[in-house]
Every structure is written in C-alpha cells, then in structure tokens.
Length: 251
Image (tube, rainbow, N blue to C red):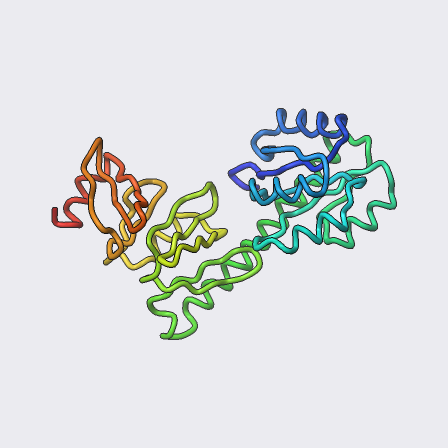
C-alpha cells in the first residue's frame, strides 16, 4: 500500500455518510485523509479544483451528469471516484463514469476498506505503467536529451530543462514552475527528479525545492539564503545545504 494516505474529498448532503467516512478516516488515517466536504455538483467541482484530491466519495443523489461534465472541462486529471448510495440503480451510473467502486448504504468499515483497497491498487497500477512509459520515452532517442519527461496519470509531457525555473515538492507529487508562467504537476516525487535533472545546472537547495541556477537572478542573504527568480519569485536554501550551495555557486 501507499506510504502516504489517499487525499480525498466528500461530495454529499447526507450527514450520516459524511460521519461514517469521517469515523473511518479517524481509525485508518494511514490510508485516508479527507480534506473537504461539498454538498452538491457545483460545490464539488470547485472543491476538486481547489484540493486536487486522489479520490472523491460521491453521493449517488448528486447530479452526477452535471458533476462529471463540469469536471471534464477543467484542465486536470479526474480523480478516482467511489459512489455511495441507498439505491442499487446508482451503481449503473457509477460505473458509466468509470467509478472504482460502488458502496450501498448503510455500509460497514470492512466494505469501505475493500473499496479503498481497489483505489490504492488502481493508483499503484497506473503509476507503475506511467513510470515505465516515462523510462521508454526518456531512452527512446537522442532528441530527448535536454528534456525531462513529466508524467501525470493521463499523459507524458516533455519539458525542456532550460524552461524550468524550479521544481517544488507537493506531497507525493512534483510541481514544475516554468519560465512562461505555467505550472506542470507530475505524479512522481521530487527525489526521483533529483536523479534525472542535469546536475550541472540543477541543485536541490531544500528538501522541497530543486532550482535551475541558470534562471536565478540573485542570491538574497537576509535571515538565511534565498534564490530569487524573475517576477519576484523566491525559493529558500535550507540551512544545512547552504555550505554545499556556496561551493556549487563558487560564492
């Protein structure tokens, strides 16, 4: 199973379902973290966009057609979905939208645990396949030199290393901040990219940051060290890495 809990939200008006999932979270914090609750389709889409969860617990009585149509218009991967309902008919709708599982209420913890297990295995399988594809792309030809393959669950994007300002850890994900202002999120962690990025120009200044020194405008020495980029963006240099950073920069 994953070392980090599955980040999830609940889209439901049913207080009993919400309480049941909250109780499950308390007893199984190692595998589930609920970061928000919404009571309808519109609110659920907004919360999904804000929290970027791995999993949505969706009440079958929510307007699922509206929910998924609106979610599909957003530029991010649709999370895994578990539909919860008192009506077997909602199972048909659930699997129409590729839900990982359907839970009939009232449900005990064992049923929720089995659904969570399916989610975890699905995520692990997709990440494994994506990582294999990334390795194939990275090794495929000399034209990939100078690029890094960034994988999300539904695509692989080739980023030119010279366009990367810095990379930031976001839990199990990595967010690439690019020179054109875009942010690209990868499903791989920062540690993996520390082994891939060109170590002539990229330096891990902090447990949460790798910077491209070609884009650093200045080093600010005030209450510590900070790398400053265009538009005033700054990244801290961890105290324990300052000496190594000074040697690398020949300061």
